[in-house]
Length: 363
Image (cartoon, rainbow, N blue to C red; front, side, top):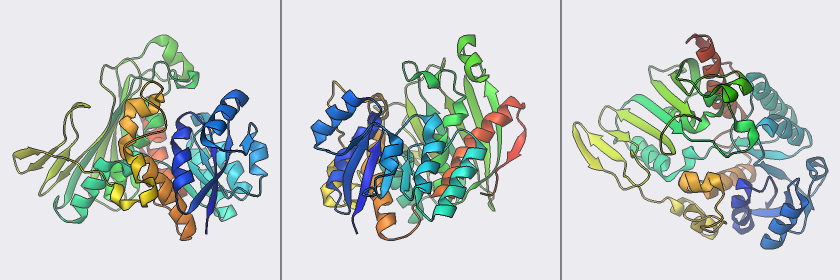
């Protein structure tokens, strides 16, 4: 089986074009971008002949099996539902939606259509996560005792809809690795807001907080986690990080981009060299764990700030394609995506309510 993929959104999305072109089980058959000039420039650069400026026209193309959405956040839910209802499989960049109700709508559309939905959360396929996951599975960490995630990023200069966005509305980079390692969905969330952003930013979404910090309980578990987010007016080098505390060993993310993570065994600490996990991928796409499609002078901001998202891009594409070939659920299916996304959405509601404890829906 060859999965015929169309890429929608060609900023960060262009990073995936050569991955799908080289994947042994996939074919990139079309690209979609509203701007005709940019669409043609990307199409010529990568030799993609089928090009759409209309998403609706793309969904009518019977030669497309699956769409990979890399579009603005406010479009994710509607575009995912439209694709599923059109009989297409969907891979969608994070987050799934901007409301809990829309998360439920995507889950319902996936169920009704019988098609696959996967949320493309980068951190859970980063080399750091794959390494810590291996340590845990091999018993080196012992019993998990506590998990902590953080995502601090200055969104100045990004598209207008980011201005004043509640920090926890874009929380999956901090939440995803915690719940993926726990192997269970979140049950409840309690969040507090801290600090203030400028009034002109706060007025956009009615969200005043510079930082939001949430405590999360895990369903049917004694494990808890904490996740913190900031988007504006908070001085910090970009970081998408997670820390893992186990009974035998603990992992802490590097303090700086140039630093190294640390593994603690008791009170003894040692710098940890994290290997690349390209060996888990087909040989044809292994190179894309360490390089992207843009050159150093023209790197897309998400790739430049995120250092290529920890080599995750080919792992994500591979998992999506193989889930379709093998007719199985992907690792981050619709219900998992809804839970991870709703943690952040309800965390912001909790912060606005002064720290109320809110239960996650059972999607």
